[in-house]
Every structure is written in C-alpha cells, then in structure tokens.
Image (spheres, rainbow, N blue to C red):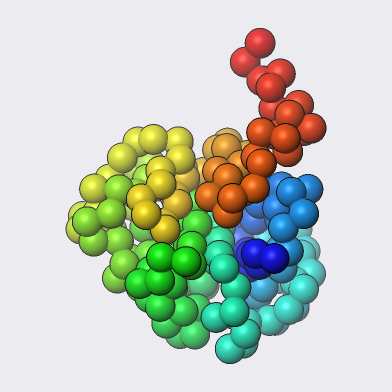
Length: 186
C-alpha cells in the first residue's frame, strides 16, 4: 500500500494541506500529517492542526511527500534539514514522488535544489518565479514533470489532490465524482 506524508509547519496553508489529506483518505491511500514543528501547529489562518506524527527518519519510508504552501509555512518547511535531505533523495528515485503547491515549489524545492530543468508551476507573483529561475516555469494549474507534481495555490488544491491520487495509480475520477467535482463548471 502506498503511503503519503503531507508535511505541515507553523504557517501552513490549511486548504492545501487538509484537502490533500482528505482526498487521499477518500481514495483509501495511507496518508499521514507530518509536522516539522511538533504535533500541534497553527496554520496561516490561525487554525490549530494536530499532526499524526513529527518528522523523523521514517519519512524516507513514504512513497510521496506533499508540501503545502502558506507563509511562513513554506519557509518553515524549507528550514527542516531532514526534510530537505529526503526531498533530494526522492527527486533521484523514480518510485518516489514529491508534490508541492503554492509557495512551496519556489521556496522548498529551490532550497532542496531539485527544480533545475523541471516544468514547475507555483503561486504567481511575490517573487516566487525568481526563485524558480533554474526551472521551466509554467502557468498550468497543475504540472507534472517526472516524479515532481506542482500546483498554483488554494483554489487549485482539489485538482492537485486528484492528480496526486492519479499519479499514485488510484482512480481519481471515482473519488472526484463522489465529491461532486463533475458538477463544477456546469
């Protein structure tokens, strides 16, 4: 069974973190909320989130690491040495995946120095494109380049989560239809 770690830190964007957790669990994918700041964090909009666990060496046993954005959450994730080391390892392993949304593609992936030559999207503006100068920056809502999946921000969290489910080999349409995604845009 595939295992996903959704990383959180003080200042994490709660929509981006919890949407992924919710969709993964609906798809029956083992998904843990893993914190770099202790079990209890305060999100970017002052919502308290209780992590399932705090980061340790077992982070390397996951099949996918997901990095929500939010400020200062993305900066706090980027400061965790074990997380950055693990992301570098995952980027070199075609059986491991990295998902990053909003500010995290620019802040965390660039800190891990794994963005070079990759097609990557992120939150527009705020200088994030400047942090991705070594990447091929796109304006797609969700971008998949090999084992790195990126997305724009809170409004794209559902699309991002469905793509992560699909990348892991599960039926994202079944999950999205059950959540009435098929009614959007009608």
